[in-house]
Image 1 (cartoon, rainbow, N blue to C red):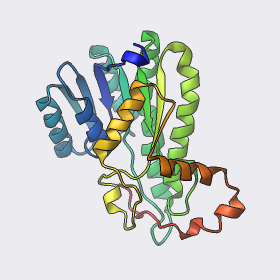
Image 2: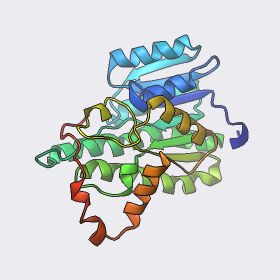
Image 3: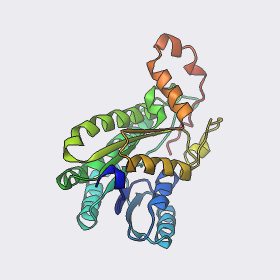
Image 4: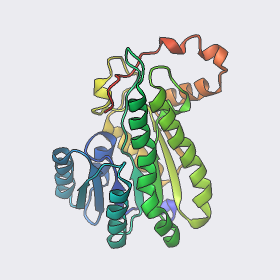
Length: 261
């Protein structure tokens, strides 16, 4: 399936009960499309599934924690056997920052388990099968926060930097197999997570608008989908500036709340 006419028929989305994940599910929902959706909240996941089914999609759901490696492998492998995936979107993630008292070790471990191990637990069960089919897209949802470590959210930034860099490397590794890898780096997007931020979020985007941009990047097999462009440019500049410059003003940036979500 070439990038020019890429139309996925079977899509897996983790973290599909809200935010970008739910918006992507609604975006792809249509007659002839199979959606396999996971999330941790049964009620919200069921509501998303109902909306997608109303749009004509065939929908399968599973209430799963992405940190449960065995449960993820069992479920995803079974789905892929019956509905071979064209697109797998590792979207599930949590966010938290240093708040007023810094990050606890437990919080750092929780963020790493979901945002890092959760990505591996999503891609691992399908990577070999997609390579054997010589088609498909693996999509990793990172963040513009992964371009530079920020004092207000060290663990979150580090986890998203891992996702970004791992996806970039994986793209080259899998290129000979015909499997595309797309790394997505959004800025602020409306969600339950950003709703908790007690600070102004520049260029805040709706989840539906973000989903449209992501889907376009997936169809084109873009190496990286970063948006909105002014914030992407700012993130890139922060990454290349030397610490003796950035250290002077990064501490002025606000912190995320210290409870993971």
